[in-house]
Image (cartoon, rainbow, N blue to C red; front, side, top):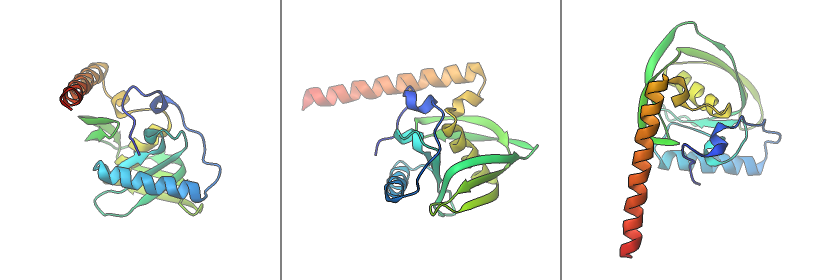
Length: 173
């Protein structure tokens, strides 16, 4: 399963609700966890793998695999905090992002049960980051215009160098 990078249209589209929780969705979730673990991520949203549905997964340092289907953020704290974020869709690029310190989210779990949790700390941060993906928002959209432009330019340079290295490898083969 391939993670889409900045520039892919799917990353900028609001996602549609998950209609059916079935074996094919369970398989997608399984593949997403494998991809996230392989890429050393702590969260992954379905749009990042080309699926325009309201689904994301999280596995932070506690090792618990969390699945959020049709999530809805219903509350956030007034207190905000800044924390460095990165994204599998913009690899090796990081910036400080200000977000609410805690969040309350309603969602369905992998079995379709409706749940509500209040999350704080890193879990709250990752939930908000992945939820943004479902709205077509990337963490760079939460930066100042100057910061965003600099980061996008660095990413474009990184991708160009990567293409050049791959072209050299193919030429030698």
